[in-house]
Length: 483
Image 1: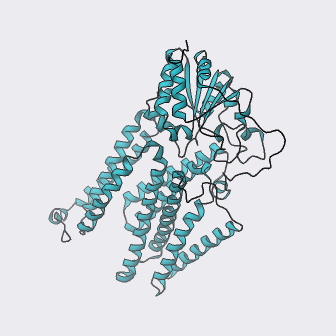
Image 2: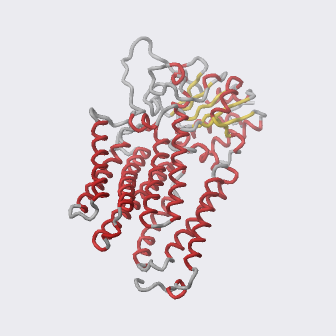
Image 3: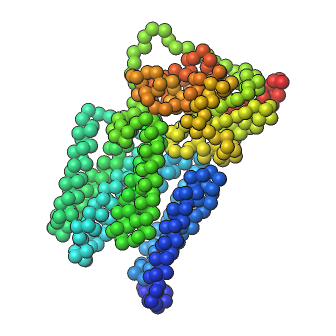
């Protein structure tokens, strides 16, 4: 399996390189169309198929290049990856954010390892290949690759809510100074490698660069709270794409450069959209420790929740003209999307108009709520973005908030001292009646109470979202005597 390529004679024919480049061109076009199609729910499935086909072309035609002859070393990792790949492909939709973070981690690790191996190979066998440009690309690849690896692992662990990792921002005195010093050291080491790539100490400097990059990844993500996870996922996506671009320059692979640029730019654009949705800057997301618990002394009158029964909520919704449902992470955790579809059907049978208000950062990753509701086959036409639904909220007879917290908190508009002040929210408080479903009285990711829950028009439905929505649906269908 490690000898000459089985098709070496055929590949030696003139024009075979042209065929490979044409395949790369086709794959690049499919990657572009894949992103375009996935921007619309109606063509998203086509976009996924296009992306899969493009990646298949990229792998097969790269593997078929004449200089690739260590086939056993390619087959072994492929075989080892089948099991984890099948497992990742079948995780529940509630775990898609974690799976996405792990995908970024594997991509970053691959880029870092390739950059490390290529530098060491050239250093020991072909030192003339270590030009300033190539070494610069390797430095960037190693930094972004390993940074993305550890950062994504921490992000996945936070999303999974593992017990040994604090979900709130992990901060300490002088943290910014330490981060800047670590980054500065990495830049200095990278500059030395670019200037003197063949020096005797170069491999040790590369090892130090790898350690700094690995450390820098988790140092960046640990201070970031859960409320910023959608933006962090997008930023890590951009890092992974940029690492792939650098890897493409190192390996002299134009398709890898193109695919990495598409990945990196899409992640950057998505990050900008997420930051805009929270009315915050990149620096504030990365270094602001948003989501930190706000310690306030209890004073004055204690706020009181007003509980409600599912049957009473159903009675109001049955008489409504417009019901707006605001999905949040609580719906995802309870896997209540199919019960929500049943509620949607029951309300529609009664002639009630039902809309879903989608906040850009609801859930744990961009588009999280859209994916869950699409699984339950909620019509795309009834999924309405925040800017479009807000003007209709004063005409909403009943607003059902399913596990959403910070994205409907009026403090974002009224309290300058709030950590979410200035963040655009869904105007649930402007509806005529509000029913909020929560598992507990704990605050959301921002660590603050939600003023919406204490308004006179708001009633609380405590419990698992799947069970509560099921009870409301049962009452609407006549199972509890509602007519």
